[in-house]
Length: 447
Figure 1: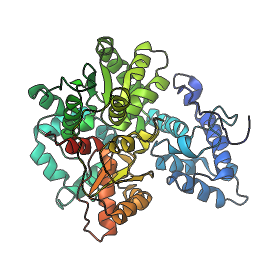
Figure 2: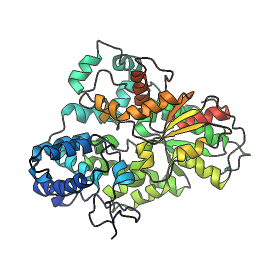
Figure 3: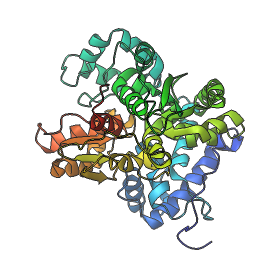
Figure 4: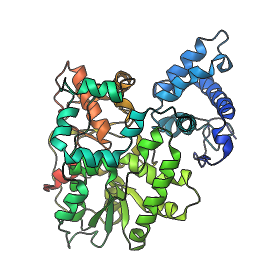
C-alpha cells in the first residue's frame, strides 16, 4: 500500500454487536493508536475543533506523545466531533484500504456509544433526540412553542439553556401546526403529461425536519417534480435516527433502519424512487444504515433506491432533460454545500442543479458551517460552532448575493446568524433557502 491511500476509500461495517466494541480498555487502545497517527500528520487541523484539542493535549505533555495524555482528557476530543465525515472524505490519507485503517468519525461514534451504554448521556439530551414526539407536541401548540423558542425571548430562553443546555442565542427551528405529510395529503400536485420525465415516481422521505419544521422544502420539491412529470407522494414512517447516532445510541438507530426499510420495501417494489429531502437523512439511508445493519437485505434495497433531492433532479436532467420554463434568478446565489451532502460522495449536486437555471451566478462554498446537527446549538458548543463557521459566514457576507442556499436547513440558518454577527447584528441575508426552493422559484411555481 502506497503513501497517501490513492485507492478509493472503503468504510467498514460498524461492529457494534461485537463485545470488543464495548470494551473500555480496547477502546482506549484504539483511540491512542489512531490519535498517534493523527497527531503525527495534522492535516485536519482546520476542519473542526476535535483536532486542535487533540494536538493541544499532545503538545502539553512532557515528550509530545499521545501515551502521556490522560484517558479522561480524550473525552474533549470526542465531544468536539460533529460526525460530519469530512476528515474521512476529504483530508485523511490513511482511511481504508490503507493499512493504518483510520476512520476517525466512526471511532468517535464508538466512544459515544460506550458513554451512552454507561449512562453518560443526560436526560435532557436524550429527550431532545426524540424528534417525532417533540415535533408532534410542539406542532400542536406551534404559536406557543415558537414564541418560547425565539432567541429574542429573554423570559424562556435562559430557562431552556439551564434545563436543556441549549444556548440562549442559538437560532432554533420553528414548528408548524400542519405537517408536510398532512399538507401533501390535502393538496394534490399537478403532474405534467408533456414533461420528458413523465412516468417516474418519487416517494419523498419527509424527514423529521421537513415534516415538522420546514414543510416549504417538501412543497417546493413536489412542485418541481410535478412540473417535470414526476408523480410524487410522501412517506415518513419515522425519523432516520441521526439525532440518536450523534449520541451513540446505535441500537435505536438499527431499530429505526429495520422498521423504515421494512415499511418502504413494498413502495420500492412498486417502482417508486425514494427521495430524501435533507442530506443528513439521505446519508443515513444510503450509507450509515447499511454499515450498522449490514445483514438486512431490505436496508440494502432501500440504500440502493435512495436519492438526495438535488441528486434526483440532476438525474432527471441527465436522463430525460428538464421541463422548459426555467427563468434567471436575479442577484445570484451563495450556495453552501452541506457536509452530509458531500459525504454521500455524489459530487456537488446542488451546484449542478442550480446551474441548470439560465444565466445563474452561483458562488459555491465548500466549508463546514460549524453547526453539526444539534451539536452547534448547545451551550457548550455554540460559540465554537460560530467560530468554525466564520469563514463561511464571511464568504456569504462578502459575496453580496441576493440569495443564500444550503442543502442543510440548520446549517443555513446558522450561517445567517454568523453573518449577522460579522455585521454587528444586522445582515443583508435574513433567511437561507434550500436549493430546491430556488428551483421552484426559477420555474415560477407556487408552493
